[in-house]
Amino acid sequence: MAEPVYALIDCNSFYASCERVFRPDLLRTPIVVLSNNDGCVIARSADAKPFVKMGALFHEIRGELKRHGIVAFSSNYALYGDMSERVMAILEAAFPSVEIYSIDEAFADMSGLPEPLESIGRRVQAEVRQKTGIPVGVGIATTKTLAKLANAAAKRWQKQTGGVVDIRDPARRDKLLRAMPIEDVWGVGPSLRAHLAAMQISTAWDLAQMDAWTLRKRFNVIVEKTVRELRGVACLAIEQEIEPRQEICSSRSFGKRLRELPPIQEAVTAYATRAAEKLRQQGSLCRQLRVSLRTGMFNPTEARYANGVLCQLPCPTDDSRLIIKAVQAGLQQVYREGFSYAKAQVLLLDLCRKNEYTPDLFAPQQPARTERLMNTLDAINHRWGQGTLQPGRIAKPVEWSMRRELLSPAYTTRWSDLLVAKAT
Image (tube, rainbow, N blue to C red):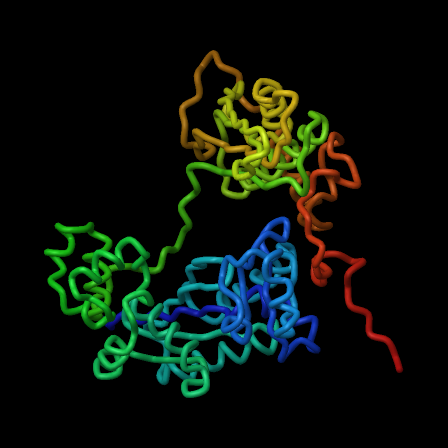
């Protein structure tokens, strides 16, 4: 049987790269992208990293950004999500099997593809860049953990490698393991790193030399598999199907503090609507949910309050209307006058797949016409943009929407934001 071969394709500084695609004037300008409500830095281009720490508060570093000529953007999730779909479509056409790991990276099965595999990696890299404008790095190895490490090397030594690294050769693999610090190993977080440091394990090579069974007994089976994967023994296969989530959360801080009930009702209606859309996307039904509300928790001069309530649904459902109704009833129970609220959350619980539960003979069930209605709703919003059809309770302009003062246009998902070429 042929040895398995995996590639990890990872977009470089994805959020910043998406912003640059439609702003070529920023090609050599450092970029940072901010979290919800323009709170802190969540993404940085490579040339911004020496000057800005991840998680830095935006209001504290405005002057620093200006001094270094760094441009800040609010998070443009519509743009990033659409660009991600375009990249993943190219990868799925190029490889026989692809596992989308996150919005900006995917594993691909290269087993059985014609040599040289590095050339295939460079061809895919060039195709993604040509068709989307997004630069990617490619790591190739005999295990997913090693492919992840090879990808990290491709980014770290971009000029020397051209962004593609193949470490199937044992000598190249061992050389890289000795050069990569333990924090670059997939799955080694801060807590585990501290324990490994106490054991004098500071590089990927050190970890690979440990006895896997001993580490399993001391930590867990995941650490054991990581050690075996670093040695070139494949323990993790490409996941063909993404397991449906057992909980679906829709939560966001308000753009400003809210004291009155009506705008909070609008907000939780929007959150419930989005959660129901995610529920239908994975083909699940929901039997109960939790709605919660809280004030800001870190201002010593502000009165604090937080509360949540579980709400039972009349039957397993993915009907936005029933979910919104239950959320509104729960909100009435947790809302208290006199507080300045900062955040609300809708959490869908007790999920089950359609056709994978036994209904109660005497309990109500979701009618077939509901499924047709929700499918039509989703089809229209997919065709014409999220929020084209939405509950009438949500007013416009939205008082509670998050603050995004530095938001770029939705170049690819909104007709009014399409770039227009003008003759000169």
